[in-house]
Length: 253
Figure 1: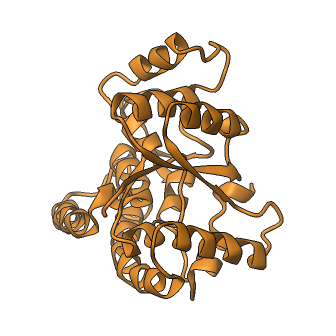
Figure 2: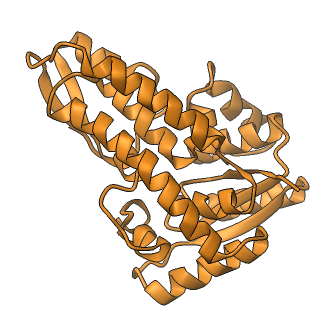
């Protein structure tokens, strides 16, 4: 049975694909919605305090509105409000699976978490490793988009942001995503370079503000390094899933 599995921050999607499931990055669905603030208001109407984490409220709103039945919640290595989110979603009838990144980057701990997740979603680490090889090819295409941003000035900061951030779930369909990436690269490589803009690095989690990258460009600057989004594309080679998700910096820093 194919499940649509939402998750609260980047997790080993290779395991979900290996199990025949569709991963859905709930953060991406929230922040790219036409009116993300509506999901926040919906969560507050259900009792979430106004001063609680807006990302958590947005995720909750997405899960409720789109009736997600399965969610992976990252309990270590992400927002401290995730535990409360898990409890509320469970109360609402959502099947919640916890996943933890080891605070001290312990490889044995992470390996156990990977095996537990594989068992929960009906697959094996061996099958997930085969999916890693497939997804690594798509990630290399995303790295080329990144290079065209910082080195050649042919990709905007917003385009860079969107292509990299969507590597967290490959929009639920890696084949379709790869075709879209290749088409974009073909178009982007033929563009003239823009070297007249002040290069910026965007460090940390992006705020819940639309049009920020475009605003910078109107002011004469361009984001050429999106730190967190770049991590979602898993930069740098890794021999296996454990090594890959230990190198992934977001949960540990």
